[in-house]
Length: 461
Image 1 (cartoon, rainbow, N blue to C red):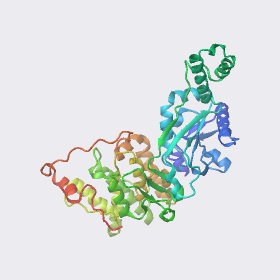
Image 2 (image 1 turned 120 degrees about the horizontal axis):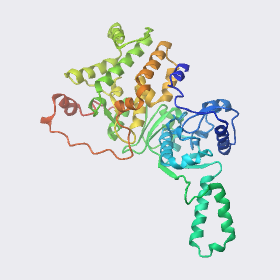
Image 3 (image 1 turned 90 degrees about the vertical axis):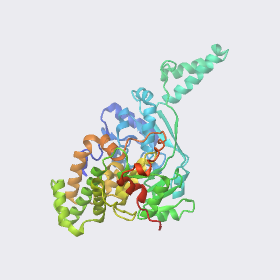
Image 4 (image 1 turned 30 degrees about the horizontal axis):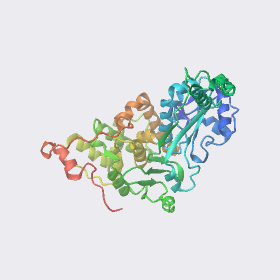
């Protein structure tokens, strides 16, 4: 993992905490939230204030995430907004924390200038001992304040000021005036410089969770379903009333994506260089095949990979051949390749459709087609790191060099090119009216009219 750390591909973007003042603020917040403090004089923190160094010190990587739900957080600086979120238990935590910071940016800037802000992503579920508990998490409320309770005191002072202004005899209420003066000493003038944090509540959208071996829970779609690494655990829980599919049930997953309109073929997506994406996926498949055969990757170029393909001959992976057929159709026309949902290339040909669940779908597709290491790294880092540890040394070097060269230099541009613009909160626009058959090109007719925009999806399981 050292190679990934040196290239900024692991623990990259963490915020350093090195000054005694910041360490002291962090410790006050940590003591307030967990009853513990760190003896470290410097460390790094992620978006939530979690520090891998402190996790090692405590021998507890969940010191801010007890039971894997109701995650606590510590904010020392607005720079944390751009940091990654480590040890995710729920994929919804990162967007919620980012939205909270962006909504309260001015207040957090003022508050973190003199104290740490600590809080919790609170819901009514305090443990996830069985899968059905996941469905009980309906909304997340962000609760936050400084360790000195500046926000709570500011609210109290604002309420007392309102009483003072509206009650006719307040001028003679010495107790009220004394309370206002005492609060003002801690909060300052809240009438001129209001300090408050909006209490924000978010619906718990479709999500991935690390619980029970990992599962994708789509509970807010038209036809809810779950895709789980260990589906037997979910099926054994009578409280789970939605269909549960294993990661190996490609037909059932493909149907669920189709019914809910959650994915789209790369070849029909707008403003995307489908040929370039497919060609890169084919390269990654060849890299895996070469590593399996012990072929030295070294400074492998695309020309070298073509030589690997020639070496493999009839032993070329089915996924490579299927993507090759699709690439040939894009570039030169001909027969539309019928890639069923059981074909090893099938999930390589899809990406998440625009909408709130787009990133979650891309995360699941990365796990269903893990040979595309670029998408795996972007969409599912925890799985990427786990698989990376099992790869041969030449493959690790090739992948690390590729990601440093092709992704690190323009992360936002790469994500947009692969997956489209970042999804907003607004619903997607209605699709444009279909062109009449006579106005479509032969290639469009082959795709849309003959097999539909999804290609062939078998109907067996």
